[in-house]
Amino acid sequence: MPYQSNRSQEGYLLVDHRNSPGITQADLLTIPEPMRQQFMATTGVFESPTMRCSHCGTMVVLNPQRTRARGYCQKCDHYICDGPACHHSCTPFMQRVESTQEQAARLLNIKEF
Amino acid sequence: MGKRSFGNTNWTPTATGDTTAMANTTYQAIKGASATARNEVIEIYMAGMVASTSSPTFMQFAYSSTVATTPTALAAPAYDGPLDPAAVTGATVSFTASAAGPQRSVVVTVPRLNVGINAWGGIVRWVAANREEFIVSGAAATGGEATLSAFTGGTVGALNSHIIYEVV
Image (cartoon, rainbow over all chains, first blue to last red):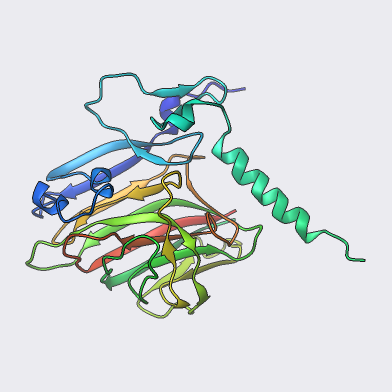
């Protein structure tokens, strides 16, 4: 099995506000809580890797200035987000997607009597 | 299957709260063609088209908790086609209007991607890593439909945008 770096799991986000006023703190105040915390004020260029949490599927924009350790699941060898539920047990998001699809496919094959 | 690009030109989203039906032509939605369909979203790109007024537009790519009913066939300037004309592409449903609009899920454990942009000259591009795509699985809520739409707040402005996805 080929070795894969965890960084190969990273997506990429570019927010380019060089020719724009960008999103200011005042703009963020127009967003109702708690969703306000999900957006960030950006001016100029912001580039960051993104990771999909292996357990809940959330796409997380990694904060380049974070210093504390990020979540990691040894069972699925993948990044996990800070959500408490994601640290309890290992149920990979892709496993849930695949089992849902398998269920749907099985339903197509039910014989009617 | 082949990758497809689903885009729209110079369209203006409307700031819409979660679990509220979106108005026609204020969103871009992707839905599976059947319960066994799977679409993988690889890239989201938006470019602001507003000429001279600051227009913070809090866009989100998120699952629907109530899927749209009777999607309307795409009409220009919206488009959806294979990036490789020779590729075999599976069926999917992409739309910007429907009889009853999709409703964005409010559930905290349901993922969404926040891609806020100032539509006065801003550019936002998100690209997924291989096997780390945003999955749209099946055709029912929650997970079978996802929308690119504006969340409540800001002063929305016109955008050009595309979503690159693959029907698996």
